Length: 496
Ligand code: PHE
Image (cartoon, rainbow, N blue to C red):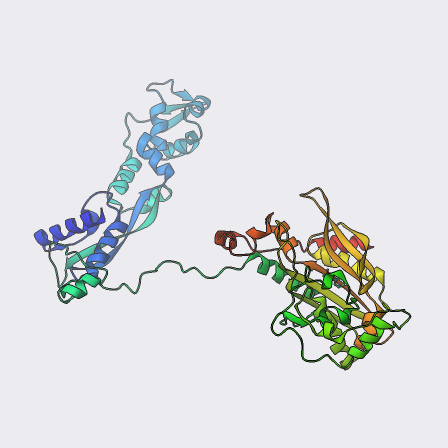
């Protein structure tokens, strides 16, 4: 269609030499389309053009009514029958509605009507509708000499059209321009004579697609923020491979524990073992074999070799242990709030809700005088920040915590309690060999990042969230994660 318009413009230019104003070409011609056609002809130097800006006047809604039915004053005049009877003011209002009043005023002013008691009479035999005439002129020409008289009946609009001249390469024929340099053109040599379309560096171009954050990353960011808001520092979790010592032994997990089985843990083949253990391994060995700090220990011969075996870490508590050890070297009676969110690996049978790798969210608080009450209150606050308001706790067992609590949350969608985390107070058998002072207590908890993410984004199969089968549209289209921060207010008021 626009190439039609282009040819027409070229033809007129050929016949008339120039076009003074494109708005004269045809009534109602879309000047935006004219502009596109001219722009493309200009890029081939076939025409040169410039814009003409004009103010034009158009009737308003009221003006349009007058164009159709006549001015208010003329309608009042016409509604009054000839003769001495006239019409009552009430009747006139019935016939003409809300224009009756304005119409009367103007008709009186013009001397067209007179009043006899309650009745209106014609004062002249005929009238001329000059208001309508002026509007007719405006709507046909767009301009008017005496705008003041009908000020409210018209409004101004900016109208742009174009004047056009022949360009340097004027011709009535639009040559096809190549947009691609092809292999064939190169081979045949046609590229030497072919006309190529020029690059348009001003074109807006297609919107570029950037990367998109995976839902897990979005939820991770929000949880990270929640931790930061509560004054936590992030632990470095860049070691996916750990010695069994850090993953198990330093956490007082006995070497016979089922979690240390190949069925549950991925062992590294090459290298299979860490070169050496930290000095305090002797304390760890002792507490496993003989106990201490009020404990009788596990009473088995602890193997250094077993402790050196490398594993893909099964939980980030391996990192927390190493951090507590580091902390004890800086200040064995200091306090700290630490968290991490990173990957862990377990040799699980894979199903709709389990994979062999997942992300663990972990938090530990190191301080004097903290208790199970502090843990529960903290979990209330933390999960409150996630928008999870109803929690229940169930006694559980971890080799490294006593007491231990499983955390359950009420899930509105499922209509039942779901397990969302595991927590507890770290045992002295773990903390003391790591080097912390006897008065220092540590509470901790862990949960998976996948579970809240699946709940938040309504994903019920973990393979739709992680792995090679995920739908990239899911990643692209899912909204930002916004955890229900307002819930924290609730969580606090519960605690009171
Ligand atoms: N390591 C535990 C798990 O993997 C989580 C946990 C962390 C429990 C800290 C208690 C204290 O489930």
